[in-house]
Image 1 (cartoon, rainbow, N blue to C red):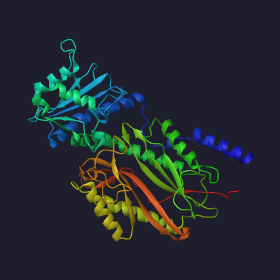
Image 2: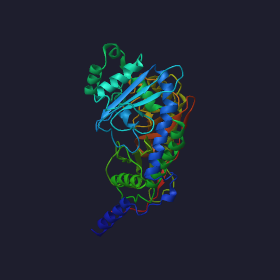
Image 3: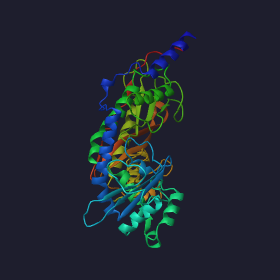
Image 4: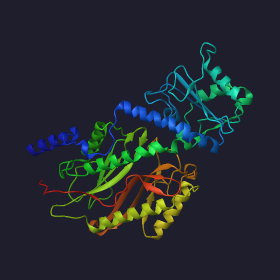
Length: 443
């Protein structure tokens, strides 16, 4: 009973984070106000420096994005001022390309001013009907295409509600209604393309994720025979919050154990366990997605069993194969197919399930396999690779480990940037196990 009480108190101390040392982290700590100002600066940069070329690339003259409060289009949420937690009443935004090299117009048909980029375009005193005001704005510009966010296949590009789409059709004259098109390709392009300022800060977030994982996978947090996988998950969640960072999913910690099949999501961590974490942070509207492994040394053990080291090498080799196949214009399915063939030819047992990363954890862009779709993903996997995009290089390699008398699955996930020529990990990748020492665990 005494030992159980001590163990419980120890777990509570870990969760409270009394061992926390902020000086060990590299993240540039910003006040909430400073973060908001930076988010608005990034949004301005993306709208004025990134979006124009994307609209012209996708042949869109005018883009309509709208949402009612608490039913926000995923695209709209990336356009709102940082101090807005949601749309207000019915927020209608319009981006218009006048053509001939002219600057884009950013217009808000909304009851309240929407930041500093979108100019107010609704005089309620002159036109009290918001839908009529929107129709007049569109008709006056006579665009060849009017793009709206509806898509059968990409959820992030399908944010316009059915009610809004019906009312927009009713509001437009027949000549303009005939010009409605899906903004699917433009919506994906907007979400997947990273700006210069974003890429100045993104590596900091990725590095912080690595640093938190390293601390979680150490004796600071884990005492073999005492600490549970849930303890580590909640430690990561608490530490994220303490830094002013968000998590877009609850951290997941599991272990593989000699003599047991598969991996366990709940239980007490013991010497000899191979531990795995899946962890994602959110900051400045950007997201990370990372998976790494730790090995818990047995009493008297000073290094990782050779079979596990070889399994990690196979995982790294699979990463190299995959990232070498990133070529502009190739689709996610083509990258998947080429990589699997090459991996199998080298004797690696691969599962590849990589995805775009950015304003969403599972971001917009080409899907490069799913764990249960290794022959390709229809439509989402047929989308091509574009430059200035970020990816979660997520995969696993299964290897036979003699010391364990069975298979071990090395599941890796690292965040990388594709500039159109090469894939560069934003803060390196795991090439060695985190090591957790242990003393004799008494029953």
